[in-house]
Length: 308
Image (cartoon, rainbow, N blue to C red):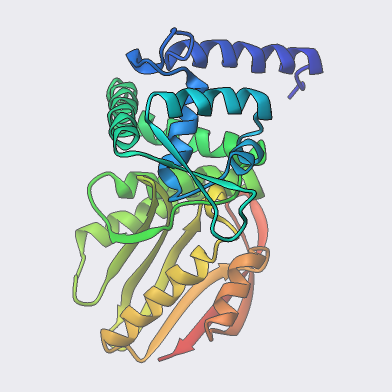
């Protein structure tokens, strides 16, 4: 595939910036039909997140010019939205905090922002909403976001999740390892069997979710009355390096043990090194290997087992 020229990439970024700033209304005189500019609204947001802070701290965190920030903060003080007190620890420093009126102004602005975001998402399907949120996480990650992310929660599956499991397995393994669509077909077969023959006391699916976005999955299915199988462990790019994979496996192990199984087995491939490390750390042991040609690739299948 031909790569875009550097100047074409620059034009694409600038074009997206023009589109998005118009889309979210930051070109209007007041943000979200409020009396505040975009910078003033962001200052209110930061002040609302901190019990007390300093002007220099706000300038550092937001990359604002000190003189410009001081003018905005003086305006907030004149409007009685911000109060300034002297620090008990350092008398040379002033601490800033929202007043009750400032808190009310922020709450109103925050609700308008939430309503605007909900309206933006409301015009899209569930699938399109997931794609949009995932793309936004990707942009933030690539452009050096703070790395601070909301915690993941593990929940049972619900309608729509199985399609996501199949789709993401197919896409991710094709992108990373060049596997063909026969792998996606295998995943579809596994999840279809899981849904048709589900025994909730003995089988379980967990979906990892963060900020309403699916970011991982794992399954425990019954192989025999005493043996269960761990299947379809997946962690999205945006959630890697957070320990989510280990957490999913630990949850599966706890469930299998509580359900009365004696062993938990799994089948993986030798090239899936991060997953193999997770399994080994969880106590699984490699029992045997088997070369095979599947998914358009020459692979070495591995059978791992954990005694419960």
